[in-house]
Image (cartoon, rainbow, N blue to C red; front, side, top):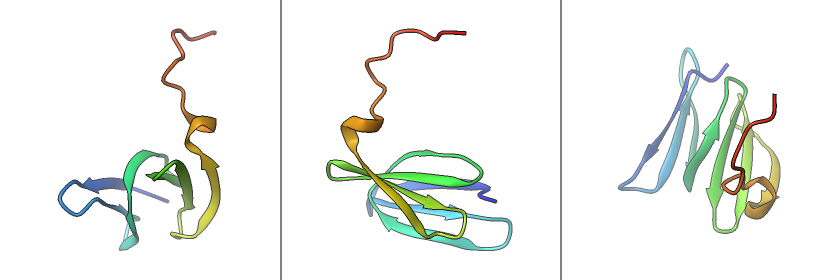
Length: 74
């Protein structure tokens, strides 16, 4: 389980930690994270890593960009 993911702005790196240790040390910008995945933006793509630090998927940035959503449907 991922406890926290943080961005180091000086080194442009993302670090993610579980209960015991650092599980991720990747170049890029922190896009988002949950207890099971970390999303890192690098260039024009978003890379998804699992709770073990393994790359599980890659998407074009436009595919996951939700900045143009103006409301929530419930």
